[in-house]
Image 1 (cartoon, helix red, strand yellow):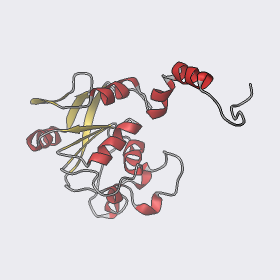
Image 2 (cartoon, helix red, strand yellow; image 1 turned 180 degrees about the horizontal axis):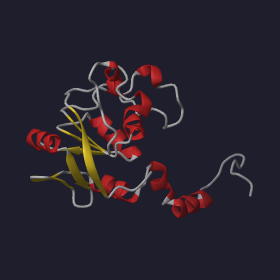
Image 3 (cartoon, one colour; image 1 turned 90 degrees about the vertical axis):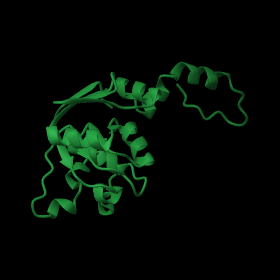
Length: 187
């Protein structure tokens, strides 16, 4: 997972509320075992609508309750694979928000007026270290759990975070009492 510090650029705007995970990535595309290859199916059904356009930018600006529905991890994977690094919304479904941070996609919740202003500006800078979003004519602060912020700033997914404890894990495994056959790998 790549570290996130500052994301700057034009924004893609999806003016819809209550976008659920099945709309983000329909169920028929969930057969992959890798985390890649989902971007081409992002908003698959909507992409067939006349006039649909969602430019590939690093920042997506959208409405309230984004990511509602099922808990599928594929939705953040599809957004990330499409090219997004941050999603700015009026609100998020809790599980979706958590899944985003586990794959390195930054969810930023702002007020309705702030989201609308960023969408109108068409360009923004998301500064994770400062916990700010800046755009022409405005600045907004956002909240993020300190541990999640640390993980995202340092590019640490759950596995990398666990591997930081490698010495403690090895010490525990070396010292614990074993009953039955030894199943550890022979060196």
